[in-house]
Image 1 (cartoon, one colour):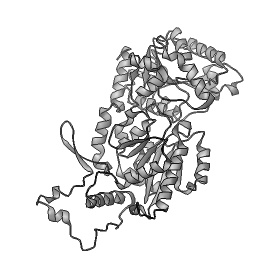
Image 2 (tube, rainbow, N blue to C red; image 1 turned 90 degrees about the horizontal axis):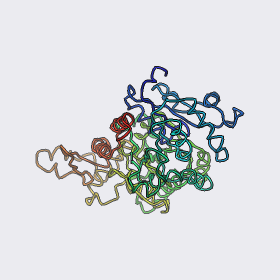
Image 3 (tube, rainbow, N blue to C red; image 1 turned 60 degrees about the vertical axis):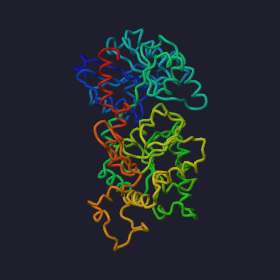
Image 4 (cartoon, rainbow, N blue to C red; image 1 turned 90 degrees about the vertical axis):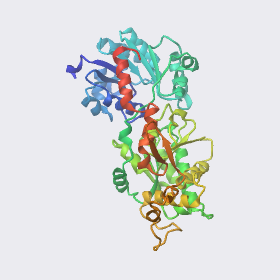
Length: 483
């Protein structure tokens, strides 16, 4: 938008504008930024093959580039999109020439260039700096690399970032991501600023009406739904996720000892949001494991926050991450989460998160999930209290079910009889904890997503995961050039 050129403009460098973790987090920040003062532009990458040139201009690439998921949102917010040829390792000289031409063709446009694509940041950021960009930033958002040759090449090309002077600032979403990209010495010397992946917390707050709507649309109104959100690629470890779910199904289908009798007769589903290059392979694996009829491959959803409401549990067995926003989103929605301990512990903010090694057997993960669903932990020394809380939770999942051995048609209303006697204070399930915050007491219960929402979101906000607060911080930085 030509009339917005007077604003401070920040150029974000990315691989694309699809529904990836980095893209979602930047767009959340963008929506909450004071755009009268700060505007974002985006420099993405695309294959130059259709142009017939090895080093085409941005305009030539944009003419053949397929629109991406966030393109329309960027333009509605006042942002501009530019393009570089995709880097494949063998086109280093052509890639450098395209970058030099790009910044020469757009002089004095940006105060800040922020590179989220760290695999080539050591190439494009020095060129941006030489072209006159005042502030150049490398932003690490992943704590690992893919296996094989691709991973080795990534490490090689970003190794210069482990030296001072390549950038003006280094950002990372977690300490682990900072160490992985910039090295332990840079982190220890204070040359890396940790900026958590923040979300719009209120957008993910538990909503019963939304839950019922999405569950009806998916046909899972009376099912237990295990959820996962993430692109189908190596890091996310979907094959382990599917094997865990297969073990859950087998444990329930062959429960001769009645360990999980309260779940007998209930349908169970695995809901997966996302797309990616390994999606077809995972569908084939689901067929091989005989669970395809219990799996929902939902693809990308513009209203992903609504789908968290439809879930009953969140499983996240990633091989590596920077700081996965989806685990923060799941906590904001009140979901219990079982997360790989390969993921940074900085995501372990609330009592909802448990962490386990992906070197454990899938059956161990499956038992942990089922035990969590049934509250088979030390929260309930009294079996009556366990029965009460469990029936409340299963009713919330699957509707009214008379399965309590304590329930009969002629049983009186004990809550009514206890009222005013003092006994009503005794009949509180042990899993409900009274938690003190700064000003008041809050009832917190893992089994009650609605009642616990204020407490959970408060903990996430205090840990720095609120995008509104982060937008103010980053707006200050973009304006002044320092924190």
